[in-house]
Image 1 (cartoon, rainbow, N blue to C red):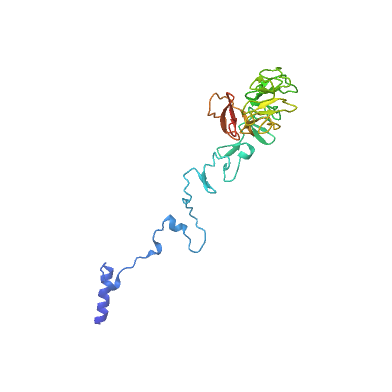
Image 2 (tube, rainbow, N blue to C red):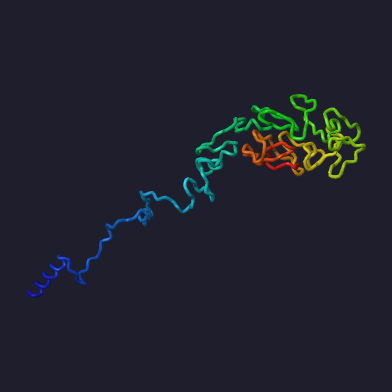
Length: 273
């Protein structure tokens, strides 16, 4: 009987909130609140319904991680709208996550017909040697002058060394050389210039580092839309709406703004002089 009474007393004490080392309450964690991060961690490998933002990339919004680079897919022409979606290969620009053409589509490519040597003013309208496309029209390249053009070409010649147009159109040097716009007594060229004799420019004293008709070599003539820089032909175009460098219209495939023969041009590399 004493044992029963003692047991009843112990139960009463527990019910009234009393404490006892042998009857301490153990918290039930089976229904405890779980944070978002805990919900995302699935022990058995099954997917969780809770979406957790990935902050491991370190890219600040609105930029996204494409490969190893944080980029804004709304404006990046190489990752436009999504990683790997390239606009630049077709000459397109990325606006609002979509590839768009700010110029004219010619042969499947977006072309600026105001400066393009192959499509000057219209698709398929190419300029000639020693010419440059400016505001959709062909004109002589810096340092050249139009002399009796034929076949739709302006007939641009470099009067500083052309023996048939030395210093001006139609001024011939005969059998002597032309150097810096003046006929010489013979074919001995001044220091820094090379004597070049060919069926096009007989007796030209040329600077091979920058001469369009003799670029790096007497027989090397640069193609339309190219200039000669350090002895190599490089693409360039007339800068539209520019009077000083840098020029905001020099971008894309011709990003470099250059002053060439007192004229502003866009190029891949600035020509000498």
